[in-house]
Image 1 (cartoon, one colour):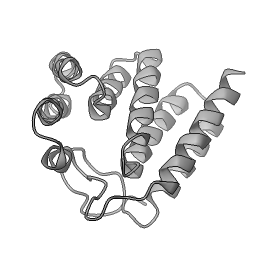
Image 2 (tube, one colour):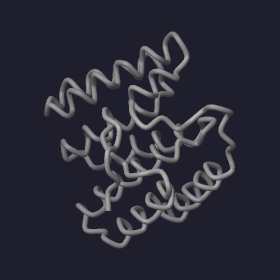
Image 3 (tube, one colour):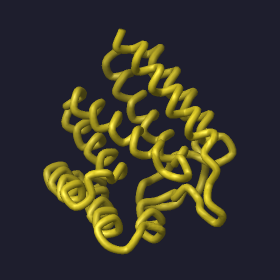
Image 4 (cartoon, one colour):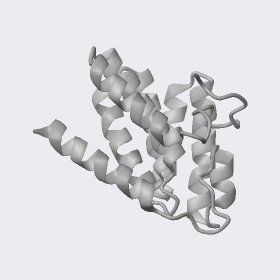
Length: 171
């Protein structure tokens, strides 16, 4: 029953992402730096800057620092989907699958509620969830999630790094 409800939510979120019309000149940010540049001044932008630091810590293998910094970002802006995504990555790296799934669910919901739908970021969420499902031995679910991510990324390039633009698309 939980899977049926989850699929229903996923379909609704994907449908919403497809029908949301971006504001003129507004694009789905590719990197955290781009997200910070277009964020409103104040708490929202400050929170994203903390997520940038958390992502740098994560890339450097400093999981504790990454978790602490992303958590601080959420204390500033509790609706920051990027912070939830980084926390999901930290939880995944720490073999905390249940926590990672919860963070991914929250990130996906918040990304889908943005004016542009953030389809690139939702695709990243789905790919991380696919990796986690694969670790659990659920290859079929992982394949479905990757297909959904590829559909969202169609014509937009691959997922790339959170901190640097994509230079080449993933196969």
